[in-house]
Length: 65
Length: 182
Image 1 (cartoon, helix red, strand yellow):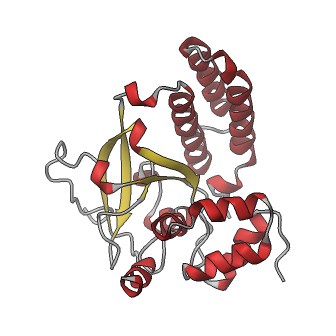
Image 2 (cartoon, rainbow over the protein chains, first blue to last red; image 1 turned 45 degrees about the horizontal axis):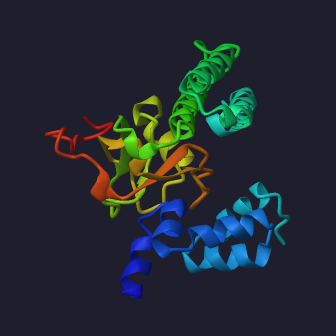
């Protein structure tokens, strides 16, 4: 089930992946708290590429490494 | 290089002003107040310089207008009683299927294929060769978000999270149209 979902992630947008994975509330909470570590962990779980993770962090007002 | 809607500061300034006003006055909870504010917000969007001359700015204004529309409906409260349906779109193709949680109120035809893919933050595996236009009840919109960056596409367009089971496919026979290749 999890493997099937992971494969499906690749056809989805980031918001779609967040919702399908059930991580959307956690993501919003981490974004509000500017919790970089939590955001990166969540985004990696849903297979977002590194440059996009950096952009999402920047847009959230967090300085990526 | 032309700015894309996410970079149209005038559009987003008016959007932010409108959101602020709607939120500030939401305490009144009257439809008339909300509609007046919606009208004022759309007017702000339409006052953007070169609104007719620049298609990107037009798209940005359209985004703003749709956002106000949704915010106004949302702020009316009692969504259970609102049966209004609005058109929504989903661009798909490649391995991306016609069903999914990601939809947008923006007509993809305002953009070229590549521009839409960029601003909608579509994944590499969604080639965006097709689209579908259906309708959904306001109350069935789970979330209203901004498209996030993915696979080199910056995102920025409004994105609705909707369960496909709540989408009305039946009223649109022949919906699986070829998109830009029509």
